[in-house]
Length: 199
Image (cartoon, rainbow, N blue to C red; front, side):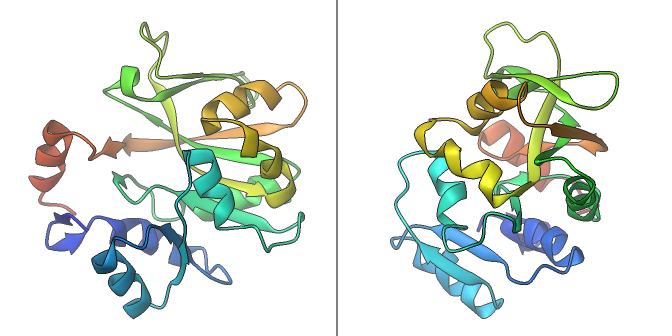
């Protein structure tokens, strides 16, 4: 709910999701965030109240009642990125045969992110979660996937570790997007995002 250019940060993610015209948009959050819950319901989002122990479980909590073949789109409400049609492009990768499609961005803070190794053909061949010595600056920030491809992630702490483990057996496509990927989880990045006049 932190304001960025006069709007809650989460509204940018919701805008990107709506551009893909999904059947529904669900927000997984905790009961003790009434301002977020109230905003989401006023925006017509479905609210899933949960206290997931990990990010991986949080992603799964939004899709537990869905068929394995259904396609889910996932992003994080404290990140800012473009383009607006990113989710449609990721969904199309899944429709064309990928089990999971990751939206990839260059990051200025690779040590805070999951660093993705991409093959020349555009398939993910490895993911390293928050490396102490990053060997690249390409991170994932959103995804599209078949629900069935994500269900085994329940036993993993981090989605990136799961993607790294299964990228040799499941096709995980990587789609590079231009521009900056900003995680507003630190005071420095929040200040930078707040000062952007184009958002």
